[in-house]
Amino acid sequence: MADEVQASFLEAIVFELLPKQPDIGQMMTRKPVCAPARATIREVACLLDENHISGMPVVDDAGRMIGVVSRSDLTRRCADNGAAPQFVCETMTAPPERPAAELMIAADIMSPTPITAKEHEGMRAVAQRMCENRVHRLIIVNDVLEPMGVLTSLDLVRYVSELWKKSDRAECSSGTRA
Image 1 (cartoon, helix red, strand yellow):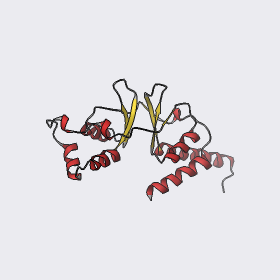
Image 2: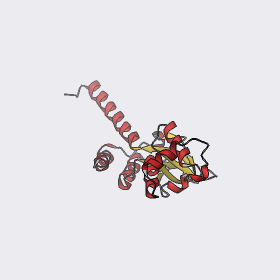
Image 3: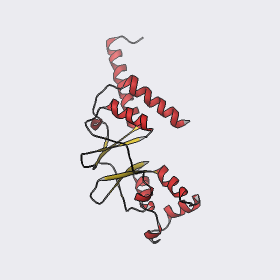
Image 4: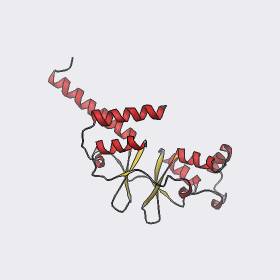
C-alpha cells in the first residue's frame, strides 16, 4: 500500500509538476558509494550503514556497474536462500574473524538488471521511468556503465519542494498571492 501511494505521488510529480528540464546531472548525488561484486554481505551491510544509504550500485573489478543492492535485497535474498532471520542478523554482525568464505557476496544478492539513466537526460523522463519501474533509486551511468551518480525518489521530492518555494516567493513578490 505504501509503495502504491508513493508511486501515485511520484506520478503526480512527473505529469503535473516537473518541467522537462533540468538534466538529472544537476540533482543526482555524485560519486556514489559502490559495493565491489566480491564484497561479503557483512561488508555490504556495513557500507549501507556507514554511509546512511539504503542501496548502491554493485561494480565489477573494472568499476562497471553489474547490478544494484539494497537493504531489502540483503534481507530478502538471505531469507530466500533458507536462512532464518536470526542467522541473517548473526551473519551480518558476526566478528570479522569469521571466514568470509562462509558468507554470500554482493553478486549473489544484487538485482542484476538495475534501472539506469544518463546524466544529460531530463528530469521528467527519468522520473517517469522510476514510476513505471516502481524503483526508489536510479543509477546514473556513463557510456561504459561506470556509476556517475544516484537519483532517488527523495531527490525528486526535494526538487519539487524547491519549485514550490520559488513559486511561492514569486507570488509573494508580485503580490498575486491570496
